[in-house]
Image (cartoon, rainbow, N blue to C red):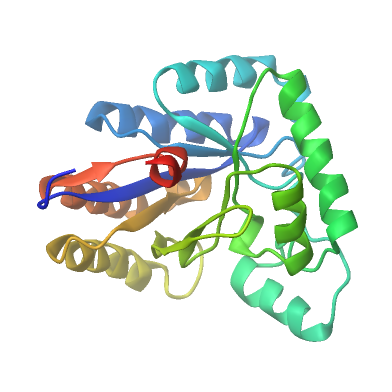
Length: 246
């Protein structure tokens, strides 16, 4: 990689039967730009919809995405709150993950059971993964131990990408929208400004795309502007797997 280039990662979150149309829209946008992404797959039931095994069209679409250079990665089991943990963890879950921090308060045994179930579902769908992004980017110490024990290559938090079993970690902040919040538009402007600032100094960073972003005015345009800014500045889009194995 030349001195004028820098890596950046685009991830497409919450891939599930109920979000299939939005995920396809994001991948169409990325394919137009030649940008490979990491697609974060929820294998269990999510958002009131069916689980992955009951959505053969989505499975075929994910296979096709992988052939086109997108990485498939595990994103929890059901992307929902699992009760438990001390009050401070429940508060962090509510504030940072809107209550969806599924792996934030789990013991190693609890995390291992949910991870194995998710991996089994993906295996049945002929989908292999090496990485894990916890819902809300929140992973308990037990979850991190379980990931290492199960042979995952990496996991991600909001501030970095962490190699397993024991590191190293790469500081790489993630830019993401929060659709529907009071600061939605301010956040959209912040994404584009931060992307320009990171690109100007060739700092590696990440852009996280969510299905819900497409339902809010301006959020799609802001995210695509951030991606185009990185590309124009010499950024090289890579998947998480490429990043950690380079």
